Image (tube, rainbow, N blue to C red; front, side, top):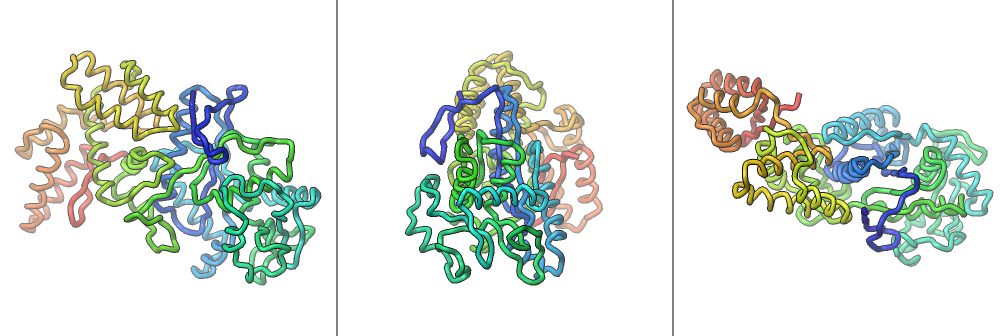
Length: 463
């Protein structure tokens, strides 16, 4: 039985589902700028959840939204001299590239805010009708004091909310903690027509309306980064419960921890953003995906290039270990450890610990058991969205033959590549670029890509 930590109840809970069907909503990106390493983490860790539930034969309906209009998008588009629509489309392509390279499953639906205006307007109408929304000079707002369970998710106190609110920016709200459902457009800003005035949706109302639009009722899992707990998810609960008072909005709230640089949260305000696609290009999507697997999704994860390099080496060793076997559920002990770890709030680092402990002792096993262990490890990683496949042309015989041409005795791929790169670097230092380029091309045809830089890196070529 899968157990998860529910942010709402602040407890580990056993999950229960109706009719073998599971509804999952993941808060997707606000597309004002290209994805950073933190965006990748949220996408991948909840991809583990989706894949695992599908593996358990649940019928999963997975939705991830796109916020393609808001203040930040308008501001950024103006600074770049393009329209908000052009900026959004450009950034969406960057996110789609990252999702693909990270091997994240495609959502069943990916609604956009600008394509859900009718549903958003209808939702706001219902809130006004129920007495929770009101119209002012600057927009339509949600009256927080009308909803008695406000702050149940974050556990904050109203004093904290008020002290963190920039009251002076909006003086026509009834109370400073009230939040925008609809913002009236300023001159030159994009807008949609409504009975209350021309404008655009507030951020929080989008997700409530999209969930209602796609699922028609409450959902099982609502996922996102823990920086969204307040105000975004808190406000979602208030809106949805106020609009549909007799329904359970979300059963289980799951939140991933932030990615840290030297102990600091990665954020635009701190100026320490690392662009995701740059690291994917350098290390390969599977290495980045494996990096995320190594930390528990709820905990903060420290990021550095040294840690990425370490993840790359470990992944290479796994690729080498399983390259000659098929993917099978052959070793019962490892399979049981897999389910035990995943059912324990998706404890992937514990799972890796179990796997590497087994690998450490593998030489003491019989040939038959060694094969079963390798087959099962490959099977588990495939369930979690890893290929761990080296191109057929790069089997051991081909590798032996290739490196022998360069008088390198092949023991394993890491040792051989180190010697190969050292040999090639000597040619480059001696300005024999013709030989160095030929070595790079030869091994590229074998299925390995060398990335030249301050220190040459390499990865398995996947296309």
